Amino acid sequence: MALDRFGRNIHYLRISLTDKCNLRCVYCMPEDMVFRPNAELMQDDELLKLVQLFTSLGFDKFRLTGGEPTVRQHVVGLVRDIAAMPGVESLSMTTNGVLLKKLARPLKEAGLQRVNISLDTLDPERFHRITRRGKFDDVWEGILEAERVGLTPVKLNAVVVRGFNEQDVVEMARLTCDHPWQVRFIEMMPFAGATDFQQSQVVKAEEMQEQIVSALGPLELLNNGSLDGEARIYRLPGARGELGFISSVSLPFCATCSRARLTSDGKLRLCLLREKEVDLLTPLRQGATLEDLRQVILNGIWHKPWGHGLAEGEVALNRVMSEIGG
Ligand code: SAM
Image 1 (spheres, helix red, strand yellow):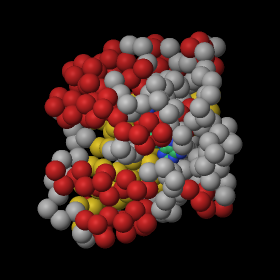
Image 2: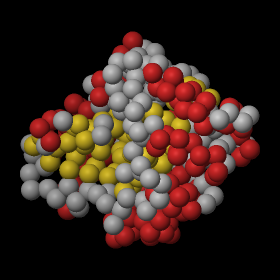
Image 3: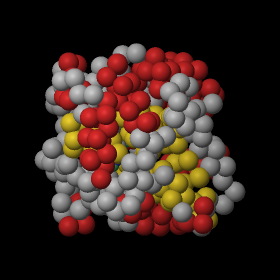
């Protein structure tokens, strides 16, 4: 079991399969983002070795992310190998959905259990403005295909940014009336320097809820108010699906954090919004034994920061979101 010094049991690993992406979302990376050369990224055998190591430390929940995980070569084979590892109880993916029409079925057959698909608006023009290159229809077809093949419950992630899509909150919420999906609204986290966004463009969950309630009716709190992952869950009257609010900025959930992240270049990132990382790939390539690496991981986890400092204006500068994985 991997414990940190605050007594939190860290057993959930988000693995970034690549820093590359087929979109350039405005809040996630700069338009002229330069990606790392492949040689700097974990190769398939290295990635699998590290995942195995994490399972031996009690990690049982894994999420594949990126960049865009579906653009990683051999993604289906990697999913198959990870899903088959003893100790892997939960295996899901966060994706922009662009390639899901083609990949949802092979991914499901390989052992992927669920997907979270990022979609910030239902308006094709605004979608293109936010993603700088994407086509709304590709993602929509990807969502339907994910549902058809059973990558369920489908969860949609919408980052809300003032000046871009705050007018879409109600229509996104309305999707849950007809679809058994969980639409999750995410407060944008500002990454200084790398994107142009400021605290003033963060739309807080409370403001989103006010918009939804006045247009669609009262929200019923589900789960006794406990978090589902990082989201607080509600339902609209008579709706088939659920609404989730991820209030990382206004109401951080650091006390219940059970996560660590493995970046595509093999660094153990201990908090999404803190710069502290522990290099695993270099010692692996230099021939460290598995026991050495276990100690490096356990020591890193022990020193996991308590939480982020957004409220104090502290932001991580060393990576943008696409380089960490969200
Ligand atoms: N490419 C995949 C996708 O689009 O879902 C996976 C990687 S993306 C970095 C993972 C999640 O992070 C997405 O749901 C995305 O919307 C979210 N995200 C990216 N930048 C963010 C930011 N500045 N604040 C909050 N969430 C962000």
